[in-house]
Image (tube, rainbow, N blue to C red; front, side, top):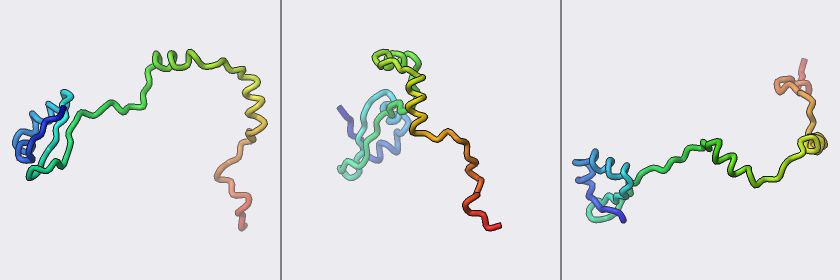
Length: 93
């Protein structure tokens, strides 16, 4: 459930309003009786995944034969190193 406050209340008591949002409360800010903004806590959007979560996720995956995988990959990938700055085709010397 969200609480409605006026723009004036937000301006005058912003510290308390932000503490409430940080604590999990959703706050709707109104201007002249019209809702214009919603304040709510941020969720953790970190891309970090703990090793425990990774282990649990990987537990049900099939095992990989890396020798076969490398052979299959070699059919599709050219492993020769090429200098990306070598401009052999553009030489105007």
